[in-house]
Image (cartoon, rainbow, N blue to C red; front, side, top):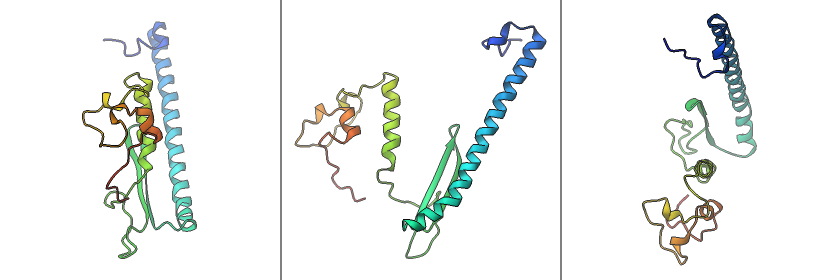
Length: 163
């Protein structure tokens, strides 16, 4: 059988020592993972304790929180109401709300991941990376760069945006 730990630094140890080391390595990883989960649970506790207070202080009727851990949803919860007319509770899986600018941070993070990997360049025209054309503008849309889009300096407007 192939040694599953052959790429690990302890692969030259005698077989028994290797399994002990592997077990200790796995135990440390499991302990670290449990620590992360406990940290996430503390975060959830803090959110559930503090968010309703903050909503009250800032006169926010409803909100949703979603946390992702290891690429999977870890927590989702609605707070307050979704409709001041009906009093319906805010439910993260069914309430639709205008997210506005909250996606900008995630989009910028994803774009910068592509920049760091060399797949795109900030100062190249965005048209090099998209299959559709930017909306017509008084500015030269073929010269709009990724950096300009991320920093809102492209001169493009968003016609028809209602939120």
